[in-house]
Length: 114
Length: 115
Image (cartoon, rainbow over all chains, first blue to last red; front, side, top):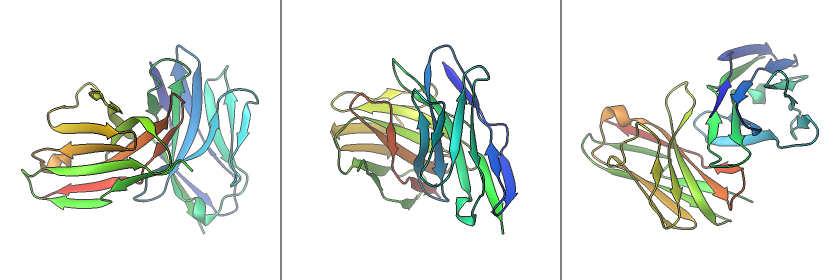
């Protein structure tokens, strides 16, 4: 079984400031890791994913996340946020093999302040 | 590519009635679809996994007679909330998986309000 912890339920940050959204996971098997973004009253959109290879993965809109196996973390970062980044962000994991059920964290609401 | 739609986007129904939510994969065939429920300010909770042509697998604590899932084709799964009650009010989200891959594609969600 896997679990995901997102310690910060809300993160307020000023526009153009950097941000880090934290994600830690636990699993007895190797996992894939994901970050999803959810805008109000919408479904989830995949932001980025780590499957294998380089531990630093990037999205097209400037977000990046780094897989740290020793710390079992997959923190999401952006050097300069925009108002349009205001949304809920969910970290998720799924086992490499087997049932492949996706386990989500509780989400972090990013509030970008003008 | 990999677009998933849900219908309706919002529905209001009276207590005791049933409501059906459709989930469609528009440009791919989904052998597996998932149904999630999301309470306000909380994460997604997996309700059931639906495989085309077979019975859905429900997560522990989810009443299968209340939440009927039908995956009749490779592009359509339906969730029927039977005898709905106000506590069933929630945001229901489906996702679809392409083949045996790891990635799920999510629908936009359905907001159910039971009065």
